[in-house]
Each structure stands twice: as structure tokens, then as C-alpha cells.
Length: 254
Image 1 (cartoon, rainbow, N blue to C red):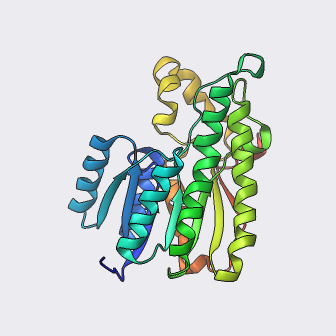
Image 2 (cartoon, rainbow, N blue to C red):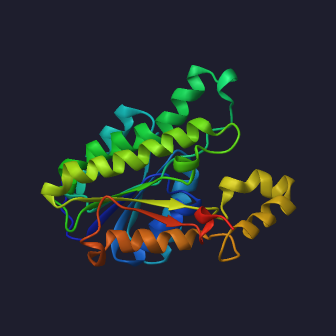
């Protein structure tokens, strides 16, 4: 079992979009980055890209909705490196759309598992190793939908993200005595594959979204990565139980 004195960051859902931008930024900040995903080919490619950029990186393929997979892999990482300094619970998603009248229990449970269970499973497994970390913290992802309850068919997504907002504050209370900080980011409309379908089928609608953002543009993955980098850093050592909106003022509406 090797012990690594470098800073150790675990980023779930890190094979593309915001997750990969966050992993790369933390790597540039000096972390050894452990990327999670369910697309093994993409994971291998991302590790290759990071390695070529001089960043220490490994890929762990597991499904964040499966308790046994999360526990075994987070434990494996913690035991290999002797600690975890930062856990970024980036994995999540809309999961599809369904109105409540037609919603299957299977769909309900899947969306809740993807966005909320995943945070619980990964955080619980990481806590023993975060206690051994340097300036340790957990960073979660919520959404405007956690306040607005989401658009048509996205009610359970909004419900799950409201849960992430609450569990972030609850974890912060629970872990403060160990010096483990817990915060969340709430990205607005970020130009990633998350919006690929509407971008391809209704580009004029996608482009119009910028009109509802005070700063007049869509967000980019690096806009989120910079804030996550701050929250993970010593500069944020007195910041916990907070949710930072990263939406160019979108949450206020114009």
C-alpha cells in the first residue's frame, strides 16, 4: 500500500464536460486526480490527456448509483494513497423527463440515485480518508432547479438537487469538528454535452438562452472549474455549508 504525500482529489463523472474541466484544473493545482466514470474508453483517453499535460491521474470505472461499487472503489483509492483531500461529487444528470402522473417508480428512483444517493454513498465512504487529508473538503453540485423545482418533466431532477443542497449543509454540520468543509456549486447554463440535443435540434433556442443571463453569455466548463478550485484551496478555509451560484446572474432573471 503506497502512501502519497501529494494532494489527492477524487472527481466523479469526470470523463467529459464540467467534470473533466474540474479534474484538469485540480491537476494543474498540483493534485493527483482520480477520475471516475462509466465509459472506460473515455476514461483511458482522459487519463492519457492529463498525463501528457504532466498531471498525475488514474481512472476508476464504477457506477455512482451502485452502493457496493462506490464503497469498494473509494476505499481502494483511500487505502492506496492513505488519504483523500478533496471529493468532488460531480456525477449527476437530468436522467430524462417525466411528468408525475406518468412517472414510473423506476425512473423516480434512478434520478434520485444519480443525483442524491451518489453524494451520500461517495461522501460516507470518503470520510475516514478525508479525516487524514490536508485542508479536506467535499464539493457537491446542486442546481437552480433545486429552488425552482425544474422545468416541465424535470420535477424529480429538481427534487433531487434540493436534496443535494440540504445534504451539503447537513454534512458540513456533521464534519466541522474534523475540519472537513462541505460546499456546493450551482452551475447555470453551461455549454457542455448536457445540452447537446437541444443545441443540435434547436440551435436558435439554445443561443437564445444567453438572453436570460445577466452577463450575456453561456457558461463554460472552466467557469465552474475555477470556483471548485477555489473551494478546494486554503483560500476557502473559512467557507463551509455554502452554495455558490455560477450562472452569470441567471438565477435573478432579467
